Length: 204
Length: 218
Image 1: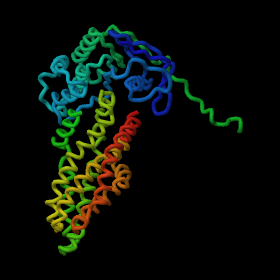
Image 2: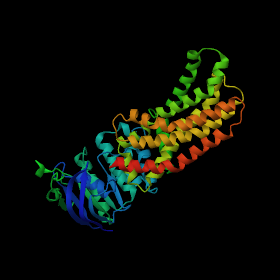
Image 3: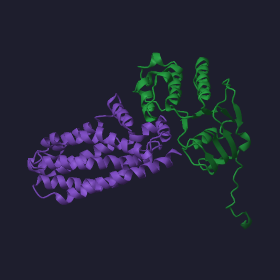
């Protein structure tokens, strides 16, 4: 149940952003991704989730085991909270949505249309999707955006429960979640700028 | 997969889902043609198969730009790509949902609107058969176009330009079936060509759509 990343190099829009990145993510472990804006945290998470290919390096143990949560929650405004969550539950194999609704205290909002929820409530619904996927590795990109303090605690509890069940999580965040996770700073792996070697300087 | 189909159908029927857009467009075209062409019923009867087919094709085209763009904007496509569902089946289901909400209503409405255009008696059956065989191809080709242009701002124009040439064979053979049927001639050859195009497109294009979608999601 270990995710192993060896000597990974990734690019965004054709420009290399990170290189030589290696780490292991054991089950029960949380890894907190740190790095300034534009360091390549989102690109790293998208690459690990299989949405884009790495430039070089190996990713082992990621196939069909990752639940990805990006900047947008994939919610349909004209569907109710229950309908949105039931859809994702059946795509991922038909789990019960009850525990997910409870974990993020969405019970009272269950019949509301997602379009009428506040930004924080939408985020909570988006995060509750992770619980119905049943996937062991969570890849979370800025999961706490627009969450209030209480909801952040809810989220941290959900992550702790997930880790206790043998899952693991890779979280890109700037705030302190109060999780005892390892911190992975992607700053030192910044890719060196590519020199335009095609240009024939000697000719001039 | 059934969950995705069900969700797409529910979304189409809810407010702002766009169900009926194609049908309304089809209705407007066929209602306005007699006004613009004039009331000679023999002329209307001659052009009826072509007008109905053209109206159906443009009505299909109208709703294509929402097919994948909405799911792309709210991040659903990213999440679907990481789900256990293969992208090939996602695009197939999307095409099927598009056909059920756009193509099928057109097939059912065509005989009613045929009356307005004075479609000759034997033509009604062949009109329905040709549309029923041809519109699935329109939806599948349209899904391919939508996959190509997903992520582009205002990709609708490019989508129409890309998809129109691919629609031409279906239009030619489909309208030919309807025209020959209306004139009481044998329809076997164009009918087989139409069925062949639809079968080939349904079998092959989902793979191409999934491949371009993967590239576009990067």
